[in-house]
Image 1: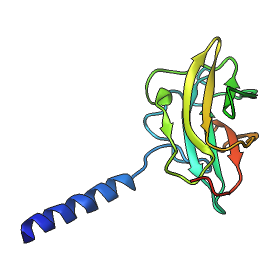
Image 2: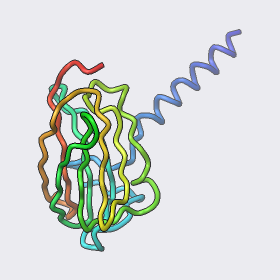
Image 3: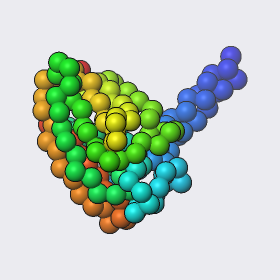
Image 4: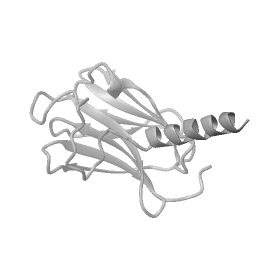
Length: 156
């Protein structure tokens, strides 16, 4: 019985350690993950879509691109939103995987990037009727970020 308990405890600790070893893009960090599809200035690609909880309880969806884009925010069906990124390619692979955010205290239920015409769109499925604040910036490492930011609240 003690061996079974010890094995279960070690598995739990190993799983927790693996969950803590995020190797993706973090805005404000100089770290460039190995899995990035393009370096800055190499075409115009979505290199990483992501989600972050912010200090103070707010949250944001972000999209890293290899070139500067002029994003457009549009209301999708119901309370949902779509972020249009014209003239930006969406490569196959991780950038197309959905982000399930429904366990976080955020108005965003899920995020999914899709190819759309001559660009890409980031689709936000919402659980609250809120319009995000949109902003862009060039990071010190040469990549560009588009942020959709949401205030703190009670969304769960």
